[in-house]
Image 1 (cartoon, rainbow, N blue to C red):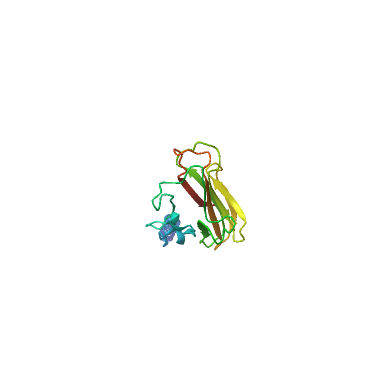
Image 2: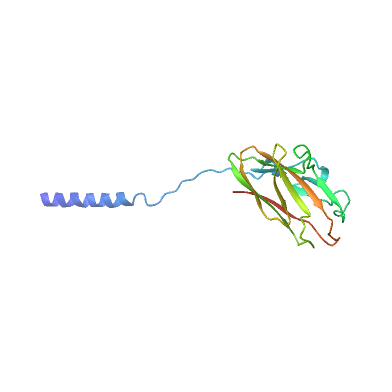
Amino acid sequence: MRLKTASIGLLVIALVAALGATAYTTGSVDRSSNVDVVTDNNGLIGLEDGTSGSLVQQNSTGALTVDFTRGGGTGVNTAADFELGNTNDPTNQTAFNITNNGGATFDLSVDYTLDADDSDTDANIKFQIYNSSGNNVATVDEESGSKTISSVSSGTTYYVVIVVNTHGLSDSDNLSGTFNVSTS
C-alpha cells in the first residue's frame, strides 16, 4: 500500500510540475492610446501661419499651405524677389512658425523638395529658420538638401521667412514643392 501511495504521490507531483511549467506560456496586456488627429498648429510639430496674409495660411483641413496663386495671380513674376516675413525682424514678421508641442526634446530635420526640377542650380526658394533671438539657425532650399536643428526642447518656437528669387528663371519654371519637417 505504501508503494502504491508513493507512486500516486509522485504522479501527482509530476502532473502539478508539468501544469505549473505550462501555465504561463501565453498572455496578453491591453493598453489604451490617445492618437487624435489635429490641425497643424496643434500637432506635436506645430506649424502656424505668420504675418504673410493669405499667401500662407491653414487650409480647410487645418494643414499649413503656401500658395502664391491666392488672390487672382497665377504665380510669381520672372526676374523678381519676394519675401514672406522679414529677414530683419523674423520673430515678429514671419511666414510661419514651427513649435515643438511635444513633451520631450528632439532634433528637427527640415528640407524642401521641388515637384519638378527648375532650370538652374541657384537657390531660388529659401526657407530661412530663426530662433527666438532672431538668429538664423538653418536655411533650406531646393538645392541644399536636409538640415538638422539639434536639441529642440518642448515649447520652443522657430520662425520661418520664405525668400523667393526668380532671377535667371523663365516663365516655364515651377518652384512648387514640399517643405518637410521631421523629428529624430
